[in-house]
Image 1 (cartoon, rainbow, N blue to C red):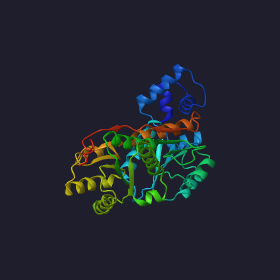
Image 2 (image 1 turned 90 degrees about the vertical axis):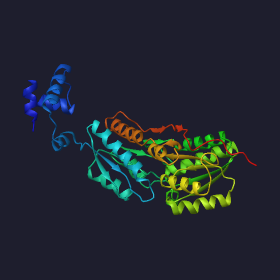
Image 3 (image 1 turned 180 degrees about the vertical axis):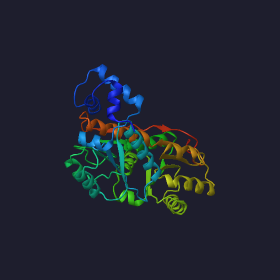
Image 4 (image 1 turned 60 degrees about the vertical axis):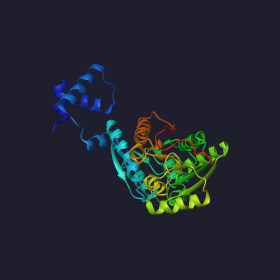
Length: 337
């Protein structure tokens, strides 16, 4: 293993100069800094994490809190987590992954132990119990999600309210007047999870403005649950010709059930989904969809947190604009007899 002394000898400087280049605690001339950095690269030197933490009073670790609930679509959560981890490494940070449903206790544990320099929190509820602790914590934090009150917080999220509105607008442009929303599992709404609530707000608000009739039904996902939900929708609104799906596990069961009932997509009914791009393009009918930009959300969250750790960032809400991609699952509403 290459030592700091060997780097110093290779660069022709003192060990303390190498240390100052690494820590940034003193101003070093540009020429000397470049010489030291070149020696670090050529020798493949990696500072000892423990010594670096002692010297800088930092752990160079980011805590990522990802409650892996059974009613959430885990692949999206993991895609965000991977984006957080890979982006963090480019900034010299490792990631401590906390997957339990500890809520405020997890924040207290990280804040009180000094395990991490900062925190990124996912699965954000509108009135999240973790928020008072975050506002008072020494470590900076970034939320991937949007609570009801963003005062004193830094948040990154897809603009889910605009996402809901965009889905309704697309169906309205095709002449659809009766639209059913197949939502997340009931527990997601019972927790007032931000992304689900905000999508619903966007759907309902834009439907009212455009004069559409909107029916929202939560669904556990899976074939049996989707069969019950679809039967209820068609019983209550038999003229439904447009579906918006915000539940990845309900997508394929819905398409299968529509086929079984002789309802062609998109000739008889149109389906629009809020889902990862992979789900949309691999479905049995390629779905018109608004993609969930998981990688972009994770990357933005890390960059916001690193800026705060470096004293460059303030409290900010970053909402990523939705983009709707039209594919084979949506078309004009069928002509009424």
